Length: 144
Image 1 (cartoon, helix red, strand yellow):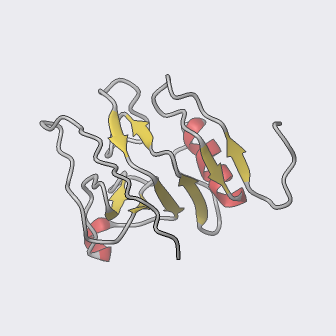
Image 2 (cartoon, one colour):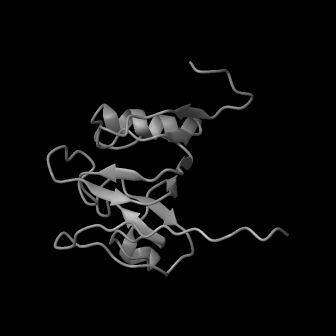
Image 3 (tube, helix red, strand yellow):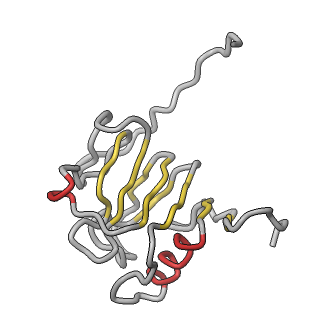
């Protein structure tokens, strides 16, 4: 433990040299969901939506298979997640990785969840034939 917090969230420093081990924070239901995934349970056991955020972004092997450990890394920008069953078709949301907006990650599996980067419906979509290019930019802060 780096330091004890004052709420029920758990945060991890991550390891930027390992795919899928990123700095992140999760509430108790998010931790249960993550532990179920890491234990390869057939489906998550959380009884209410879990929350998680990865403000440094992440790398991941697959957008479709929660247990994939061999595909090339896919970069994903800063985001937060609602860990509760989502269906892309039923919700009208895409299931493609986007650099901004919302989509359903792991669509069609028991681990499908809502993934949110920036403003919904904006941004480029990732497909396996693309090479990732980070486009984060900064501007001068002119005060309030």
